[in-house]
Amino acid sequence: MAGNTIGKRFCVTTWGESHGAAIGAVIDGCPAGLALSVADIQGTLDRRKPGGLPSETSRREADQVEILSGVFEKRTTGTPIALIIYNRDHESHDYDRIRGLFRPGHGDFTYTEKYGFRDHRGGGRASGRETAARVAAGAVAEKICRQYGLDVMAYTIMLGGIWADRKEISEVNHEQINANLLKCQDHEASKHMVEKLEEVRKEGDTLGGIVEILVRGCPTGLGEPVFDKIDADLAKALMSVGSVKGVEIGDGFDTAGKRGSENNDIQVSKGYLSNHAGGILAGITNGNEIVIRVACKPIPSITKAQTCLDADGHEIEYAIKGRHDICVIPRIIPVCEAMVWITLADHLLRNRTARI
Image 1 (cartoon, helix red, strand yellow):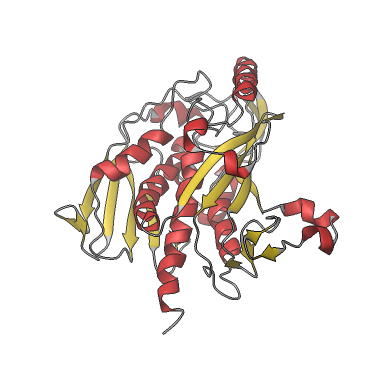
Image 2 (image 1 turned 45 degrees about the horizontal axis):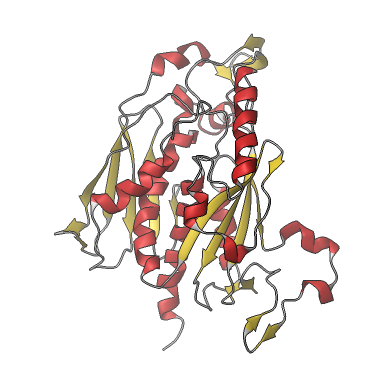
């Protein structure tokens, strides 16, 4: 496999480019008999579309998914599920002037070095557009996981240096997160984040942020020794999202400054007294909530003039034209959830063979 597939039992392959005819996913390993319709997938895809913020792209794709195979009479057949989403609103001419340029922060140079040739339109395969296929596949994985009682929610905890007032994990809920466009549990902080986005948009720049992901209801015992630890697989799945530059689980980097007596999660008859480990011990789920945070870089497509190299090695001043988001938040939130759903579905199905 050439890096386009994730999973060992529940396998997802995405395909397509930002300005190609379509993008999509093929899911292999989904059990037969799962109730599944277009509506189950479409609702999740709609959450990834721009939601009305002036900082979001003006590209308006319907992202209408079609199921080509693997489903009959609204139930999965056990054969590969093929999903397709047509690209309807791409404006490739915006990229003609940068055909031979290597834009800072993009994959233009590295893709050319690897393949000797690249699709320059909108970033091609490296575009964030590819994540729509992940979200579609994640909706199928979610259907599997919810039968086991799992729930996954992602939400904004920092954007552009503005931090949300952190609530106790037990207080976080879907209604609270969905009550504002940035999917932030702190509605007052969200207002300042929106103001920051507008300020930076006018300056022709972009922002990064941090998303936290919470998994509730995860059974104990998910994860494989040694290289397929569930935290390792979750980290890989999330790091495979183009904008993600860091992943931490539980207390993450803060654990490096603690003593063992401070970091150990004491288990008593009523459960754990803390959750510094983020729900995972020795790469296997321990029944506590799984807590993950991902750091998202600023989008590299900025309208400020920058220096870049062309294919002949010349330094050129240029400014990007086209339609781009100012920040991947909040549109990356359903993408993060999808990657977690896919990883959990894979491990749930793999765990069926752990015992006689």
